Image (cartoon, rainbow, N blue to C red; front, side, top):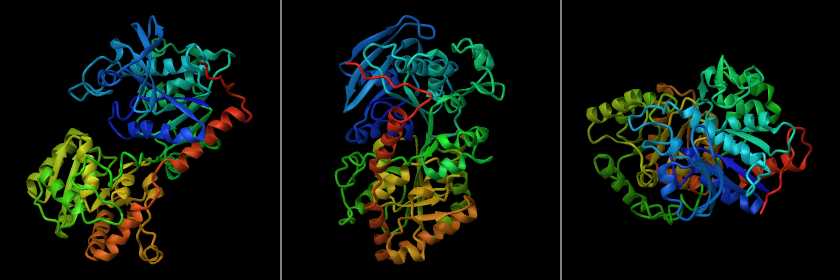
Length: 493
């Protein structure tokens, strides 16, 4: 079965967050299920530079203001279709932001182009490739199901899946863009792309996709509530029969402490002592006093309100009062970045940070920190706690979304049964985070018990295996079962 994944970033070619990790790791686990994933991505300069040999399979004389080519390539086992459109994507900065950290003003056009090409493929308008299913990810690909709906005009088209990776990012733009985006006037309605008087990219995907998924079962429940739905809860409740929560997984070949070339010392579940070497290296890298006999708490995160970084900063006096150190890696809101730097200045040698992110330091954090703090106010799934489990870095998580689904609280009963893998707390407040850190400090002072929790986490299956089977079942239901919305197209040679 041929499935087209439409996404704005993919690891290892271009990455700003967990979306890229998901897009880059899931295809390999779907191959054994008989699912061939081809990923459609924009041709950013950094991505094009890594393509190597590529074949132009189609041209668009005018793709939202300029000519474009569709390139086919294979990179590290990933089958790719890349939109080479310099007028849209050949620019500095990140996929979404200028070098100054501002959104590109033409982002709605840039990602409408991604969706439009995805729809053209789903309609069979590119002779070289026709997918059976088009799988759109997040708001950047949200117009894909809408374009398929409005442009099919009774023609056969691919079935569609829309995945919400984070409902907080919805892609909302003014109604004056409707003709610019190539959407018909009738689409500007409650049952179309209209959203609170404007155009909602994610809303459009949720309205027109045949099926909707999100990245954990708990988050699927939360987004159907008034608070968690962020304005889309009513629509999601209407479509609850089409909504499914499927947990994210990770690529265990990339995140494997026994083979990881990015860390200072390799280790495994039965030989954990080398983690001490990684701890010293991490302390040095982030400016902490080097001492393996102190509890080291790590944070790898976007520095935002969602991630609860302000909660952690307010809890620092008690956290540091336990004798612990705190290492923070991330970037995000400028005000939050300043607050983190202020904490480093206030507690030199005890709080350390690196503003920004690089893959090596992210791996070193998982391999060197004793515990990982995730005080998120909401969390669709989260990947850092999965990496932490794999590396014997005990996750300390707010009991929300995918954090709730993936970490087993090491309470007294769980410890008696030998199944605890971390610490959960709720609600995500300063007081409850403080209580959780006190629990962590008490457990850490019992080395044998701490090692059991570490090893429980390290033997947890955090791969894509189970979830890949669920995605394969979903694709088959859409293409082999009864469908009133889509007629599958066959893969062409």
